[in-house]
Length: 289
Image (cartoon, rainbow, N blue to C red; front, side):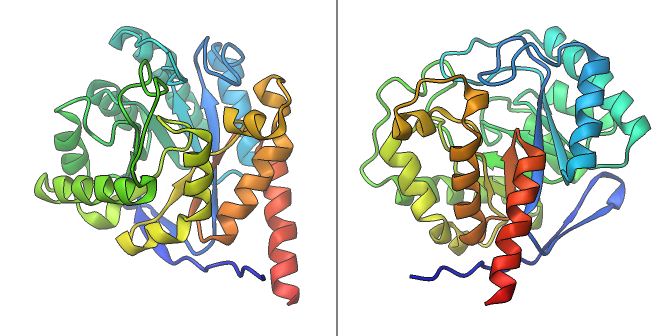
């Protein structure tokens, strides 16, 4: 059965009232400035190397750079506020001086998000969907920047301890409905919200596949949709190949292309050049029909 690409039309207003048009799927490049992230931990702890990597991703076609200073892989432990600030703020400041590319700060700490926005970040990407830090919603409302709300069971330390759903898609949609209403009451405009169903965050293999196979169902919420399937362990569960995460490019691209054809608005990826190439081919095929 032919599956046509769903065209997306959203307009985000970034920090400083800069517009970010979403009339196609945007590519968010992952930059983990951590020693222990599941895929690239330790590679970009040096701020110079981190900024060089960010600029390289921008050159390769990334639309957004997502910078995180705390690993949220399954079983990961929290880091101190001081550590997370030390890892991220210098990188954001240096990148903003070198490029106007939109920057998102991947954090669930309001103090980190505040400093990041002051340093030049444009978007808050919170895996807790504003649940872990009571000050995050107030910050998001006050700064009026876009916010990415992700679904997750438990915390990174516990999320893969036998996660269970009666109806995975319905439960995630209900979660998002509650979070959207929470944001509305907190003074965060709904047009600033982006939803991430959280592949790999408190999900079994069948749950991850169920999410990918039902991405269109999340469109009922009327918000832009972000999918982060890049290099995640469910790919190895499918292939049976126990390789390092950076060897899962083929599986990542398959999931990404599927998400794009389902109408995903943003894909969060490690392999920007390969993703941009895949999108160009996907679009060319679609346009030739």
